[in-house]
Length: 103
Image (cartoon, rainbow, N blue to C red; front, top):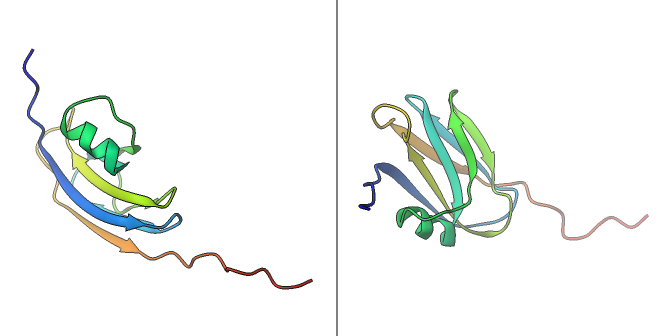
């Protein structure tokens, strides 16, 4: 069976710390998939993969990086018409303090 060609927009978010926020702006309904490096490779090969996200009906959409890793964001229209225009902005997290105040 032939593999279906993928039509998607890819954003390589590089290494991001847990808690970093990402803001996604879309021009139409689209699937938004936030995935690790390994899962992005599996996605491109049309293999089973895991991701955070789903169908985005409102814009802008804000997501939080769940763990420190190399992340990719994919916008695709699987099940929808056309390819939505998109933009992505990484918003640095405030971070957690390294030391707790003495009590």
